[in-house]
Image (cartoon, one colour):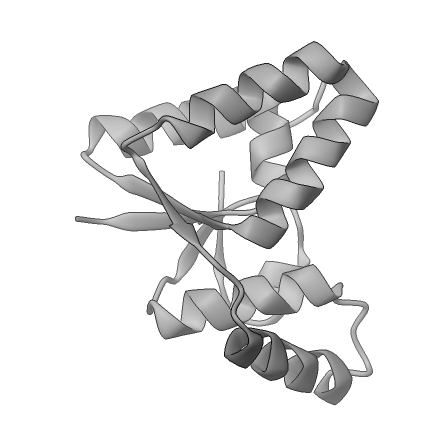
Length: 135
């Protein structure tokens, strides 16, 4: 099965109708699923997304988003283990010329481990390190 990594910015673009990328991100999501694809995300991304949805859209929206993704058979959860966190720290400190967040680096590690090339996001950091952005 074909997998697409989903970053916080991708989740937000899909969840928030006021997001400038909402329509394009929603179309990319729907198209991915129509092609039989699967989403991959991490516990760190879920942490960021829940918090951001709650701040921007409210508690009820955060709870609704969580119920939808937590129960989805089209989503594979990846956990940031101590080993993955160590690799992410190495990336974080090695790329001192970039303003990657630590969570970005954990995502890069997971994507590389799983050999994923594409990511649903508007975050240019993923392109800086060589991944293909959707939408």
